[in-house]
Length: 127
Image (cartoon, rainbow, N blue to C red):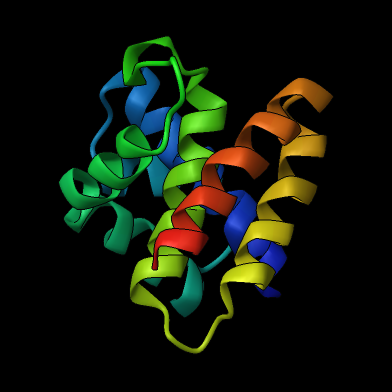
């Protein structure tokens, strides 16, 4: 599985967990048609394990917004990208940011892409 596909699947898994209060294993089983991928596991387990820190970074970089106002898809995209930016040293922040924007174009809309870009650019700048 390519990393882009792993990111997309991670978004879907995290979205299901957030929306349906589903356990990680059940959400993975719902999304995955085949055997899970090591990078996908790293993403979803990493986001779940570091959710408090990741959300704090997101919230600190929201201008005139609050976490509860965020679209759940956009929140999942942000969480995956912020996890990569903070915990995956082998992935440049710019790559993670660009991947998130491409995924947002598929799963969300143009306004969301611009919003996500602003939040992630602020986080990357602060690192």
